[in-house]
Length: 506
Ligand SMILES: *[C@@H]1O[C@H](CO)[C@@H](O)[C@H](O)[C@H]1NC(C)=O
Ligand SMILES: *[C@@H]1O[C@H](CO)[C@@H](O)[C@H](O)[C@H]1NC(C)=O
Ligand SMILES: *[C@@H]1O[C@H](CO)[C@@H](O)[C@H](O)[C@H]1NC(C)=O
Image 1 (tube, protein in one colour):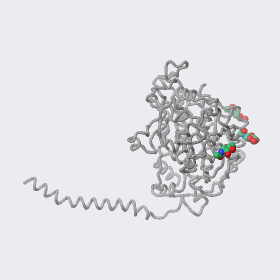
Image 2 (image 1 turned 30 degrees about the horizontal axis):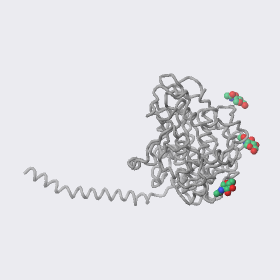
Image 3 (image 1 turned 180 degrees about the vertical axis):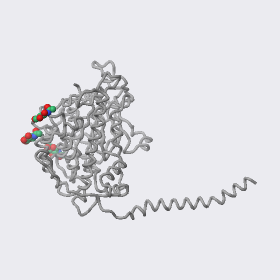
């Protein structure tokens, strides 16, 4: 009896639930397909052309890309190091050089031509690559029709400008030692920073291993572009052996299995979307940022700055980072920040995005420096340096943030014959490439205040890459292949800068 009554009730309620379900699905469908399209039109957020910026002799800045290139060439903006510091090789002096064509150092050590995509590893002079993620793509070798680029594409070497008294001599074993003993590198940025990570996994091979292992099909199913990638010390490396004539000195708490030497975290636009929406609402209260700022259909991988700083300052064994290398630019487009899209304006309204970016970048450098200064106070009283006590107080590591300029693509890069002698300005719009210099220039000018941002350094080392239209991956003209010395040059210069100029050894 009881049972029939209950089942009777549930039979009567079932259609009700069905109707409710259908109604909910309709509402959802309406929200996704109809309602979002019928948002009431609103006035666009403010727009100021970048060229109308106010520059003064006391605070030099650029209104055009040519002016920005000249400022860098003269080394007029000091956005790195401590005030009045004389650098043995400043980033501007380094960038003031040219590419030189070099035959292979030992003839017969490399193949005469490409017969297999992995020949690219030998041409580049790598012993191998630790990363297993899209290996042939990352080497630029996945399109057979382009194999004629080798060997020439790997034969160029950057010769720094005369003002550079010499770079620290590259030796991968010393770089590994640096990463273990003086702290690791945390790479924060988009897929081009992903290219940089891949290149590091080759430069440091065989002394490092990389995770995740993308050769595992389950890993491929359960990871995406936003997943962490790490390089760890290879336990089989002679450097890791206690019998090594000059064994590595590990900080107490360091674990070969758990402590990354290099980590890549994908962050496309410096902050999470929610943070950017909140910031935008604060700056332009009249504008419905929540619904109108982003194009939610464009794919984006991005995280909160708090997360990145959390890693940079995390204690052993999971964190031992000393240098955070940040780069952003390629995703700051009106297709993503669709509230700014305006076909009538130059670059489709890009200068609106640039103006918002300026607010974001100013906030970012302030928050990052505040966090590093707080670590300083907790760790040590020394002024202007973030000395962090780790490993039971026995070691201190100076934490620094390096901003690497974003490298725009070269349109028509497939037609490129060799390298350029001067940077070519783009004459037409393609993505936001013509405007990338503005994003870089904003960071650079903010960071000329060396008193305010002692631990954040903008390094203008993009010129070598801008002269290499031949060095892109095979399927597009933005991503940069490993082995052509563009990505490897970033590593060598940043290593020089943090070990020699910032005196990480001191
Ligand atoms: C740097 O040099 C300027 C003048 O050239 C001077 O006023 C300033 O005190 C110096 N700063 C430091 C930290 O030495
Ligand atoms: C770059 O080279 C030019 C000459 O070619 C020189 O005038 C300028 O000072 C150099 N800049 C730097 C930063 O070394
Ligand atoms: C490679 O570079 C050399 C020297 O510049 C040049 O003579 C040769 O034609 C180039 N090869 C190809 C395939 O471009």
